Length: 245
Image 1 (cartoon, one colour):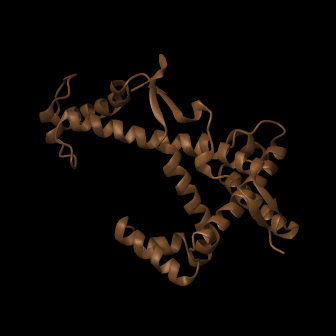
Image 2 (cartoon, rainbow, N blue to C red):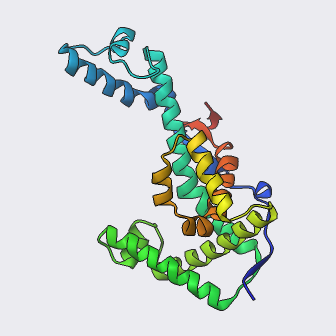
Image 3 (cartoon, rainbow, N blue to C red):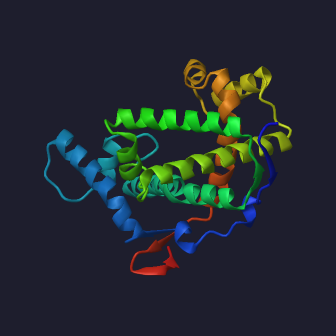
């Protein structure tokens, strides 16, 4: 008998501690300033002028796509910061919290052989990541995964959380009536080419059909969580953490 999920919580019912949904910044002006300074330095290098003030004419002269003045450049810098900081917050803090929560609250029947095979793949992948960083697994766990000692125990706990997340994702995928056959794979390729302007050959190399079957349920579940929780993230002034800006 394969491993199965008897119950898992609806992610929309999960209440995260407030700090997971809060990003502190000094001000939007401070966020945008490094980008404005970089563009000013680029203009000075090209035009061979000395100035400390970035103007609309300077921005326009650089012919940045879809950006014609300082206000548009400022908004671009803010939007870029928001997108990237939300992404970091989700993958570095929110997703690990959710995976631990699911592991704690999900009722699952585990097949020992299936679990062992999954753990073997998990450790193999982590070892590859560690080798790429010229580290052993324990050092990688401590420095990159930020696991407390005992590190190897933390890695084992992460492996189990990942396995349970994997099982939930596959159950949700089936519950939604979605398929992992070759027709579904071809539709996935088509949608990415059509809507994301992705390169078809690159997608097929990066995600061949065998990996699609293995990874698609988790990719979709993670995207669902990302869309739901990153919308709840707010930016607050670092000196007034209760004031949204």
